[in-house]
Image (cartoon, rainbow, N blue to C red):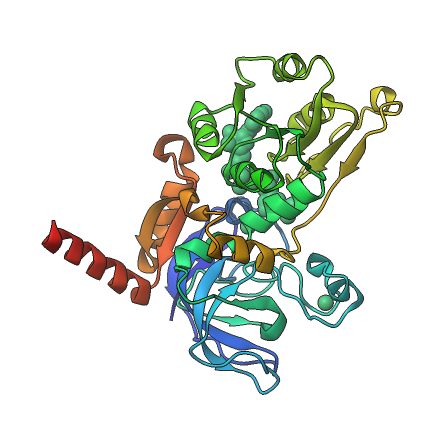
Length: 364
Ligand SMILES: NC(=O)c1ccc[n+]([C@@H]2O[C@H](COP(=O)([O-])OP(=O)(O)OC[C@H]3O[C@@H](n4cnc5c(N)ncnc54)[C@H](O)[C@@H]3O)[C@@H](O)[C@H]2O)c1
Ligand SMILES: [Zn+2]
Ligand SMILES: [Zn+2]
């Protein structure tokens, strides 16, 4: 089969590799119908994730069709359409029993496209299939559910739920990349009174407004703290979500909240940030961190099914899976391409899309 293979810092190629097969009885082999690229894949390519070894197939988000199941898989069969979560769950360890799948002690957690071969490929071996794959309800397209694999639950669980966003809250979101924008979408499920999005790029802020932000602040040009204080009678936001991953943006998030407010850190940090306890100690604040568990996939899937959540707005570019190399170039150059999420379509999906385009042309 063909797959996107990491070959060490800065090196990737679309290679012929061995077809995956069942290794453990709890495995499934999935044909990848739709996949996508994550900012974390770019981190791996920069060499920031040393545990990912050269030769690993990248990718941890996909929708596919079960091809084969191991003898221990009881709830899935060949032909089932499934969402593959970025987090695998053994389903039996202490943390899986608490639905904290990211902390799985039984061999799960974030392993796909990280510690084992991932999903930017024609086929993939998916461990712990019963507890890590989600059947896709009939009637939902791949693109409608694809972003449930990572960015939607990340923004919802690590941002919105950890930050305990509630009705009437003012929510400040620092960073309007795919994760910050997914937070703009999912924060609305909890009816805040105001969503403030902060970014350095006007194009990202424009999208934030399209996705439901009430106010946007370009903190390259404006004093974000002063603007948020102005909007909140000098008190600060109820909740600030950090969705960038730099010391400055974390520190900014802690300056944006009111006494008793909450900071939910989503960003992945490569450098130490200063925790200003000299100003925070007396302000009754709560700061949370987390790696996504994807425990809310079933909940978010229901909201998509009922039309209350539409993640397809995140898809800005589409490529055939065979053009994954070009898709990476487009995704990595978001400043000029304005890419948010690129959708990689396997041959089955691409054929249907081509058919739709042909009939649209014929009809029009
Ligand atoms: N905790 C988790 O489980 C988890 C899961 C996935 C991703 N992440 C992390 O979430 C973060 C966001 O992910 P993403 O894919 O949206 O990243 P991204 O790099 O695509 O987007 C980051 C955004 O932050 C903006 N930005 C940069 N510096 C800024 C500043 N000083 N002020 C305001 N905005 C600034 C950029 O313009 C960009 O729009 C990353 O650190 C990523 O690694 C965490
Ligand atoms: Zn990811
Ligand atoms: Zn586990």
